[in-house]
Amino acid sequence: MTAAFMDLVDVTIVNIAIPSIEQDLSASFGAIQWITAGYALAFAAGLVTGGRLGDIYGRKRLFLIGMAGFTVASALCGFAADPEMLVASRLLQGGMAAMMVPQVLAIVHVTFPAHERGKVFGMFGAIVGLGAVSGPLLGALLTQWNLFGLEWRPIFLINLPVGIAGLILGRKFITESRAEKALRLDLVGVALVTLGLLMLIYPLTRGRELDWPLWGHLCMAGSPVVFAVFVAYEKYKTRKDGSPLVELSLFRVKSFAAGIAVQLTFGVVLGIFFLVWTLYMQVGLGWSALRAGLTGVPFSIAVSVAAGLSVQKLVPRFGRKVLQAGALTKAVGLLLYIWEVDRYGTAITSWQMSLPLIVMGAGMGLIVAPLTDAVLSEVPREHAGSASGLINTTGQMGTALGLGLVSVVFFGTIDEERPAPGAVGTAFADAFQNSLWWVVGVLAVIFAVMFALPARPKHNMEGAALEAEGDGQDVPLRKADADRDAVLSR
Image 1 (tube, rainbow, N blue to C red):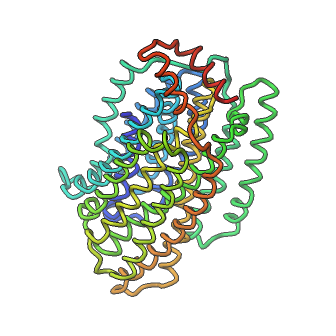
Image 2: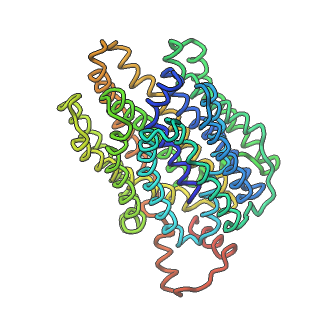
Image 3: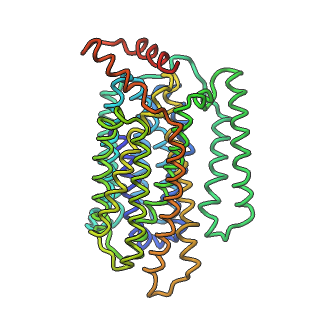
């Protein structure tokens, strides 16, 4: 939970400090995109590998290595002297997060019996909400206070005590686990999946800055070909020694395949919204970091409350309808926001934004906590690390795609308008509305894909039966849980 919190805070805390970083380091918009997208790209590229390494060498070991590396990379970010060093440090930070984060879900999956995981994911949802609340507020306060004249740098340095605490707690309390069958790392698979991601996301992020060169279009067109080669190689690797990087049999589990698709598209929503929202408030409306951070508090509280309610109370009764209601609720909040921006223009206030933000936050909370539980509910234990890595990878790949699309849906609109100095606010408001329409469209896709999720998570129904049989009964974890999951899959 400490690791999940640190990762979430680090993502949200950076967005709020972007204008301060831009001013202090004289960073271009392209560099600013890379400070956010670079982390997401390195994270996405390394997650599947990180999950598989945990299966092979031990999840606790990889968790501690990733936590230590993340803490060191945070220190390098905090002491960066120029945009290039900050981008490089963020890439390292993303790579270390890729070692650390997949182990979180894998450790939960192998530690707790199926009927208890819903409660754990409820706590995970609350941590997601707490991270969403803490990140913007901490970022705003630390930037505003300008501690020791360090301006934005404490937003990274604050990870040091949290990281050290995570290392101590992890070393003491986490039990080591690994795949019961001996596996080997698929280096060719690592190279192919990393190349495919880079060919897709790098040109998308740099395209506008470089005036959309031909090589960028060729790279993006070639990316699906590389992924097709990757799939073919993984099939061969499975036949050869049973140690592929991605366990393709997971995609035959309907709930997993559908959940991965939802995770990818939901990542696009998050990638677009949070960056353009920050730029709109701080650059377009000229608000301070503190005001922007405080404006986001209703959203974060709504995420936290809805996430806790969805797993504990709603999903056991209504199943996937809760997630679909979340997608619709978030879309309604976005439409409210578009209407308000159009009505009030640059005179819009924080309290006027609170209603759409609460509605959007509630929608996000109804999706973010139960989604992971639904995706992992039918995954065999021995593939927990690989599956967790894939879940995180697709979410981060979606986020990196969303951040790349900001070039098109947000900055593209501003470039078309070429605003005069006095009309920057109006131009940013128009670009913000255009971006939100894109997000609404993506949410419509998410709603449709959710029909492929299981109508109700299997272990929620099973948990009630188990508790009725014997409250407090000690269930031998390894065999009984594996047998139970196998029965449920059938």
